[in-house]
Length: 295
Length: 235
Image (cartoon, rainbow over all chains, first blue to last red; front, side):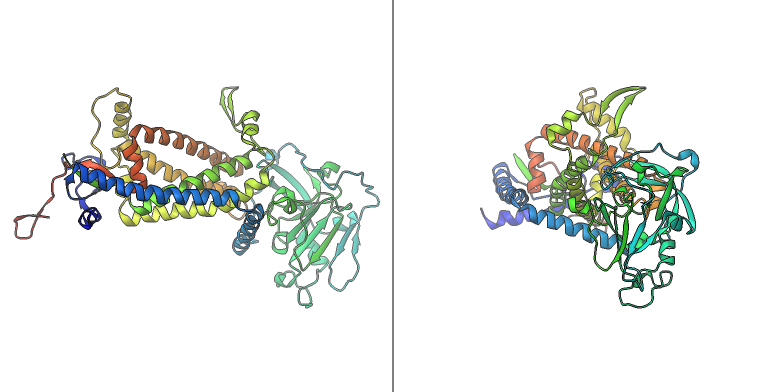
């Protein structure tokens, strides 16, 4: 084919709409234009069309095939790394935009949902409530764990909230919680700082150790939290649910309750809390879920 | 007989259209993997459950069960590409003037009904159209709005605390989730109708979405331009 024909088609020109007579057609109203080549005989048109089709179909087909097989044959490890890194990027963005002043909506007592039990990992054995204590590691000026009884925890300021608990599966329930703000616990029992300076959770929360590890007494369930989320005013160490002491299946004697993260992060039957410099292990993150899981 | 080649779809439109196909497919597939974990939606007629989304056999057949983590991984990866592609498409439509071919105007609904009636052979005449008829304009603008609505409802269920104002605006977490689900069903229906229409429209139409060009009859007259001096001159 000649270069002349090539130029002919490349010099498509804008022409008026298809129906200049129909003034009220949408195309005419909006001033749609057409791009047409110069007239050519039928054979030339067919030839030129075939040439263009062949080129684009081959190129498009090859691109689709490369994309498809690259995806199919990509080692699973690469995919998992990509997804894990994407979770981490999403987390960075979420944390950049995170504001502790944004609160989850609260509900009235008539909106409380029926109880819903989900997940008993770390709670398969009976717990002797009389022997239970909350152990806390990583505190400022201490090398050993602090042990607190439930009564000692209850002596901290009581906070109540009726918030929606979101499960990562998609359902949600409105629950009325009563307990102690995690930030109130930290205000009383100061965590270590990254640089060894005296802790100041109110004015310099960013100097505190950046992570919190929470585990059940048998270490069967464990979650990791970032410091900003656990300092959120709606993150509670809860000991009451819907006006009653926590039931065993809901995490007695003490559990986490917070609308800042999915239910998988709101660990039941807490045995130990530790403030850490490194990102703690997390039960569901080890099965491919987002470590941050922030809402 | 004299013909012309008509450039129907620009390179950008074709790329953005075809890239959207695997991206939307991935969003729907991963959405299904996530939805399986709490499949609560049905079509009800009164108290009679007409259709359940989805029967257990449907999930089993597609190998969906117990893949929630994978679904979340895929969804929160491809959401970026899907959104970026959609935003690029909107910017291109606005900047290139291609919106003139796709947007409806107030009279479009009436003409779209005539288009639909003529397609099922109830009326003989079709309303005048440009590149797309008015039913297509409504459908193509609608599907763009659906994409935007999916991103917005998705954000509302992705960050219901940090974007609590948005979630509340949409009626709460579960309503936002409900909308997100039905938008997905609408995408699937759009896709089904779209494929049927493309098959009916024939090879030349499909080919133009890949090559960009179609062969048309030489019926367009050269436009005449009135010059400043009042003479008519050939453009």
